[in-house]
Length: 87
Image (cartoon, helix red, strand yellow):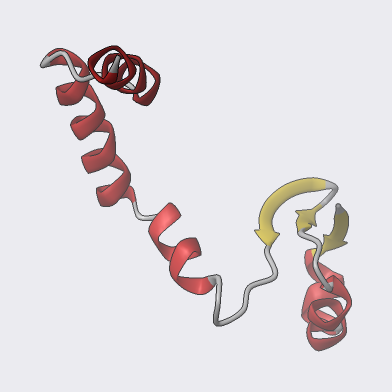
């Protein structure tokens, strides 16, 4: 993980971005973290956007709660039941 000051990012933005490669960087102001730079490409942008969508994350949490509340089964349990049925 790299650390880069907001000042360095402002002055050398392109150079900082180019130097990221495959690693993330923490942007700091006065030595304190304020943001993160995450390398991204056309293949990962959709995942990045979805993973940080607050509305979608709330909906997923609600769905998981409903699943548990209604007695949903995990994959391991389903596999055990299928195995019992097939003898």
